[in-house]
Amino acid sequence: MIQVAALYRFASFPDPAALREPLLDLCAVEGVKGTLLLATEGINGTIAGPSAGIDRVLSHIRTLPDCAELEVKFSTADTMPFHRLKVRLKREIVTMGEAVDPHAGVGTYVAPADWNALIEQPGTIVIDTRNDYEVRVGSFDGAVDPHTASFSDFPAWFRAHRDEIAGAERVAMFCTGGIRCEKATALLKAEGIEEVHHLQGGILKYLEDVPEAESRWHGECFVFDERVAVGHGLVPGTHALCRGCRMPVSPTDRASPLYEEGVSCPACHGTRDDDARAGYAERHRQAKLAEARGETHVGAKY
Image 1 (cartoon, one colour):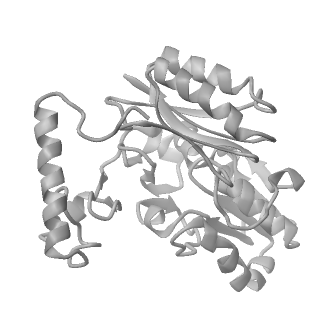
Image 2 (image 1 turned 120 degrees about the vertical axis):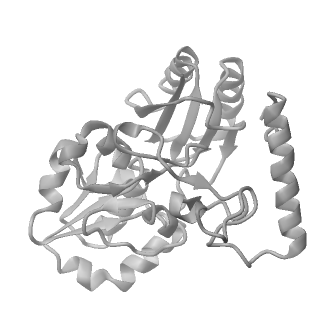
């Protein structure tokens, strides 16, 4: 059983480049794969590996400046959900495209156990801050879908709907693990919206803590690894990943005549020329041959 750890922490890293190599080397030694992003504003990512290795990597991260209180969402996978290890230097650990500082003030954290009561209160507008393809996989009852292609589109969407949002008694926002809501609620607070709340630990913590019988969540939660999506109890879901467009595909999508494993799905069928489709098909064939040999076709060491 592989342990999966989703984490982020807004912290002050004056020299994130100096943190990269020790973290990269430790992950490699411990057999940990996944992606970690480092920026002057902190760390963000999801990693997977043996439990002891994950523990040692998290212990190291907690020694970094202002990371002692690092919060982590744990889940498991039957097989390694990442092909490689990446520790990248970025301008932001989650890209909003605007200078928003969560340290200056964010919304009120709401524990998963209290979330249902909040979103069911009259006068509450519930906003899903994730991207459109994530929302299609699952969301909360009655949540507003901004139909954004990327998180950097969110500020423009908010300003276009500011009057409607400001007219609500309170705003409740959520995302996968909590990091996008840190910036989204900070943006709303900076723009004068006072009654702003967000789901602590994100959807992943809600699905982990709230019994399915009491849940207001419908569908699955898209995750950025080879599991593609998870359900209640963080068990792997039913979605797969289209290798042509990298979008999640449901069982219904896979039953479509427009779906070809490793090549295309209903969302991207007809958008690739014959050469591209032939390339995807050959890549898929090579991956299957490597799998039959017990080898990993995709990914280098770093």
